[in-house]
Length: 307
Image: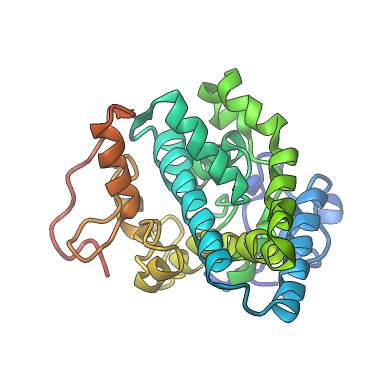
């Protein structure tokens, strides 16, 4: 298999790609060279979860193709709140420290992020900090430069291995962060089965269908938002993708080139038409006293923030 960015054999990719495993696994096999359906040793729970929600979502679309207005709007609302939790708490506050959230606000946002299937905050932050530290190099664990679209979109979740939390998240070892890892399973069970209270339509649409919709909304940031023109290793491949804002309900994560240019800024949308609901929510939280130390870095001149 070739490296899609350089055309060189994948075996020539630096062996330091995976700090968690020290490089290739047995017999010199790199994770992206394995069959897509074969997780690494610790990846079976993630792989099983992804298969479960996709299978249930497909069944739901067949059995209940339209759940009714209120269940549909409820599913969108929960997905949007979960997206807010991911972009504000996980991404901007925890991973990048571009603002400080009141513990109550952080707890509520974290709960909805986990309800959306984003995982625990410590592991999410470790993956993301590793991504920024190694972006567009052979060590970037979620880059399409390694093995193309599907690797960066989904496969790395169960084949790349756990993030090096001890290295990247020494500041997130307190109980207020770690407790979410311990209670992840019951929150996911609630997310998947909770809709049963509203019948089968609620079960499928408030559960698996919403989870699949939210999963791909997040994964497009790793895949589509890094499918810029082929560049040399280490050069920025990130893109702003306007249509992804529609999918993500205007949370602001789609302005990914802006984010890579100014990762320490809590504001992702730079121009008037770059809608960033996450930033608007931060402004509201700040006025309510629930967000402090909000960083908003100066942006480059017009033209740098590609549309």
